[in-house]
Amino acid sequence: MKTYECLNPQCGHKWETDEEMVFECPKCHNSNFCEVGNDDSWIRKHKKLLLGCAIGAITLIILVISLPQSGTQVEVKKKTHSLIVTLTGEEAKNYSIRLSKIDKSYDKTKSNQEKTEFNNLYGGPYKLQITYIGNYQKPPKLGKYSNPYSFPPLENTNIPAITNVTNNPEKLSKSIKTYTITLSTDTTLVPLKQTEFSMDGEKWQAEPTFININPGSYIFYARNKKDKEAITETPLYEFEPYTPHIVTKDEVNALLKKLYEDDLDAASKLKRLCGARTLVTGLENNGITNVSGLCTYIVTEQVLLSCTITLDNNNPEIVKSINISK
Image 1 (cartoon, rainbow, N blue to C red):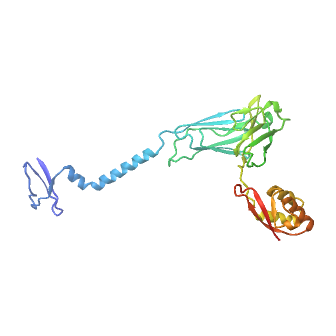
Image 2: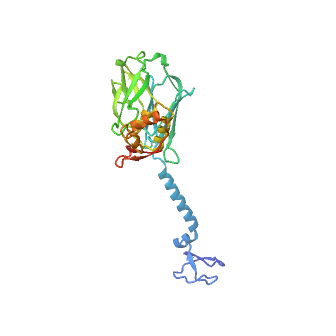
């Protein structure tokens, strides 16, 4: 026994028959009919439902794929004056870790590292905050960690104090391309022989001087050799790269005016800027042929001059000549 359904919208008749060959609906004689339960007709009738289900399934798959496959575990290790936070998991490097003191005297944030260490922690309490900054819309499940944290007060420690950071030269030049950095400490707190120094908090040296330091941003550290946890660090120091200085006629004219106004420093500044023996044109009748003579002439004769300059084609940092126009 088979069941058929007429597909004529005005009929919709259903009937059962044992006949093997069926040619039309017995009620309306329409030849457009189907066997009830036939896969093709069912799909046609329910294609909107099927489409919705397919879209939902794809969305679910995308959502599952976009979620982190595992959570992030947190391990916090407290030392005498430091706190080490270690994260593990596939998203471990995509966190911002902030440690702040309740009274706001300490507030530091470090990001994008699996292991984060905070040093020079005294008293308290301190609050630890770990925030996800990765690309997943829903952050991974984060392991539990305690709060707050407290440490021994400063007066019970023997910590070096960095009092000064000096760089030589003050600015790089065309011939000097690296810095020499020297740290000074308060030796009344910790003797110099008992202090060691670092530029990254990992590699330590006995000398407070670092040589051949490239331009960049650095934090410097000092610690007590007898108490490895007694560490201090500086703020971030910026050491600028060498920037060529191109002399302009406006600079030179400004110095010429200061010479006329009896500015005693203008002569030495002009000689440093352009070179004492640099050619001067336009005053040959007065016996003036170089910058040194020009300075003397302006001061003694009390004459206000203006100029144009010519730079060296091969090295625009060098003034080739100063051309005076009265």
